[in-house]
Length: 118
Image 1 (cartoon, rainbow, N blue to C red):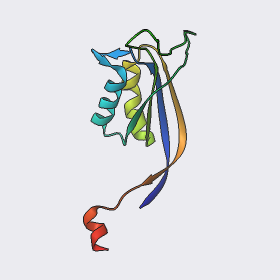
Image 2: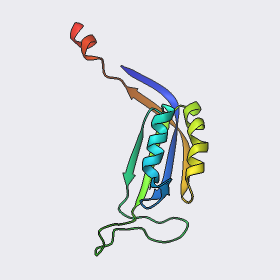
Image 3: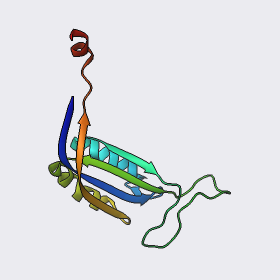
């Protein structure tokens, strides 16, 4: 089944070491998305990047840990994004939020019982 609709995309840019209440910020954002019933969220780890600080974030060869750029991408309805946005703003000490309108196409798999009966 295919469903097409206008949606909003929320992208949150931060770094690996950003924290919210003792846990990585990106994990806290994904958990909050789940609590709010957001359709889904994906976390991307970047290879290199920079932001307002003009500091290059990249892996360090001699270090076990790194401070790579992170992007959390969320796509859902305007209403759901508006529920999430103030909560993300509260969590974000530094970084960037980008919001855009997108054309979304959701593909739903038929349930196993329904597919078997066809």
